[in-house]
Image 1 (spheres, one colour):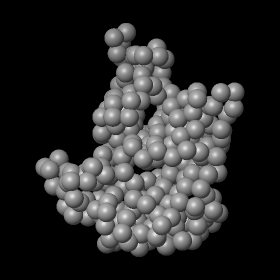
Image 2: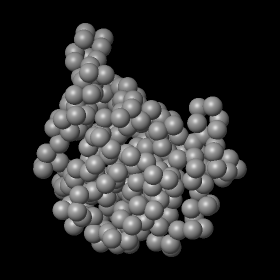
Image 3: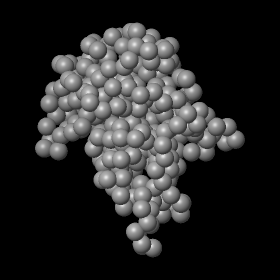
Length: 256
C-alpha cells in the first residue's frame, strides 16, 4: 500500500498563474507545487483524496491509470474543482465512481456540479455516486478491507475531514485547529501529513509555528508539511526543520 502526495501547494499553487514564485527558488523542481490532492494505492484500488483544479496533470505526471473512489476533505474550490477530470474513469470502467463527503461538501458538490451526479441523457449520464462518510469507510486490498478512520477538524469557518489509514498515517491538508479531545487519534503515528501555510497567522490554516507545536505534541516518526504557500521555499524549510520533519513536494510517495 502506498500513499502519494499529488499536490502540496496552497490555493493558488506555486508559481501562481501569473508566474509569481514569491520566496521560492524556481530552479528547484520541488518548489513547483500544484494544489493539494493525495492518492492511496493498494493491489486492488486507487483512491483519491480531493480533486484539485490541477488533478488532470497530477494524474498524468504520476501515470495513474484508474480511480476507484474519492474521499473529500471539504468543500473549497482548491479541493473540488478538478472533479470533471474523473469522467475518463467512468468511461473506462462503465460504472459510476463512489465519492464520500460530509454534509457541507455534499451540498456544495450537488449545487456546483449537479451534472456529475444526475442522469441528464444517454450521452451525459451521471459519472459519480455521492455517499455520506460513515464508520464503515474502507479501502480494498485483495481480500482484505482496510478500515479508514475519519476525524473532523476545524478549517476556519468550515469543517475539514482528516483521513487516517491503518492507524499509521494521518492526512490533514487544511486545518486551523484540532479539539483537544481528538488528540489521541494523532499520537505516535508513523506519518503525519499536516497543513503549514506560511510563517504568519492565518484564520483558516496552521502557520509554521503552530504546525510544529502540534507535531511535537503528536510525536510522529515522520511529519510532512503540506499546503505550502510561495512564502516557504523548500530549501529554507529543509535547513530549519528538525530531522523528522520535511516539506512535502509533488509526487512524494510513502509506503505503508
